[in-house]
Each structure stands twice: as structure tokens, then as C-alpha cells.
Image (tube, rainbow, N blue to C red):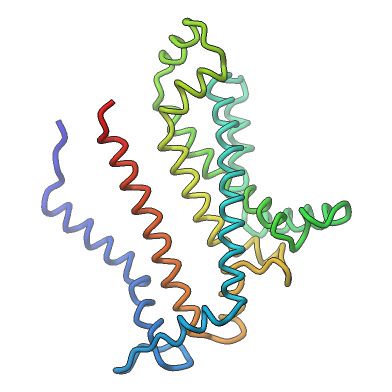
Length: 269
């Protein structure tokens, strides 16, 4: 029997949520300032900085590049994590702990170490091709995939841990092949874990800046890199405007995923 949390627990959760959201909420009025520097509106509110985003092709290009890299890297990282997690779950090799440690290494390694490693890796690839290389969108997508794949491994592995192995054994006993078992038995039971991994990896790639600063220069300028350059060279209020847009996009994506999960769970089987 499920019990609802009491008023005290609900109030504490609401206070924590407000505390965590305050820095994000504070950005919203700043984005409407009529001034050319970061400040709160003093009576008048203006959309000049939102118009500046649309009129500046650099922001539009950076936005599109970040979306493309996020989609590609999230898809690649989630696919690799799914294959790895399925292999671990089905085969149960003797060195499972070691394999998991290797897969999660980018998550625990210092970001500077990972960034330098990926920098030299892409520089080496640049000697053999000009597509998947340093300062290219494909190189950035590959580097992001390496950094975000461990998070997808964790989510999918947790989802697989909740699957009853007897379902797989029953399907195997009835003559179902490996691909049929994966497609008809395992994947339907971990679809929420896979979708959560896809969403999380997209968000992580979307806001990645540490590694991006090492592996890009002038050609593959993502949105976070443009924001960092704007803060370093000139504190432009347009950064507050783009921050509000990013907050809205993330809120819409997470809300849509939550509603989809609730609707899917509520549907009768």
C-alpha cells in the first residue's frame, strides 16, 4: 500500500526545491534588463537581448551545433552503453567488476586528465583524416560520447538489475534466440532506463564545456563555449537571455519525458 508524504516532508521538499532553483530564477529578470551590462531591470523591461540572439548568426549557429552534437553523442553513448550493459547482464563474465571499472573510468577521472587525453587523441586522428579530428563537430561528438557514456552505463545497468532473469530463461526455454529475447523481453522492461540515459547524456553533452575548451578552437564553437567566451571577453547580458532559453528547453524536455512515462505506465496492458 502506497502512502503519501506528510505535510512536513512536503514542505521541506518544497523549500529545498526553491533553494536549488533560486539561482536559475534570478537569471530571468536579468535577461530583460535594458542596459548593456548585467543588471536587474530598473523599472523598464526590454527584449533587446533576445533580439540580439536572433540577429547574431554566431549564437544561432552555436545553438544548432550544440543540438546536433548533443543528439549524435547521446545516441552513440547510449547505444554503446546498452550493448555493454546487455553483454554484462546476459554473459555475466568473471571479470564483471573490472569491466565496469574500465567503463566508468571517464566518470571518476579528473576532467583535466580526460580533456588532455582526448585532445592528444583527436590531434593524432587529425593526421589521418579531417572529419573526426581536432576542432571538428564529429571530433567533439566523439569526445562527448566518451565522457557521457559512463552515466548511461549506470542508468541502464540499474534498470537491468530490476529485470527478473526468469523471464529471459523462460523465453530461452521456448526457443527464442538471443536477438528475439533482447527485442521482445529485455528491452521492453528497461525502456524507461534507456530513455532516461538518452535524455541525461543529451543534457550532459549540451552543457559540456571543460573538454570542449581543449578540443575546439574556431571551427566547432558550441553554445557553452560561446557563453564562456562572452563571459571572458565581455559580460554580455545576452548570456542571461540564452541561459533562460536553455532553462526553458531543459524544463520542456524533462516535463515531456515525465508525462510520457506516466501515460505509458497508466495505459492498461
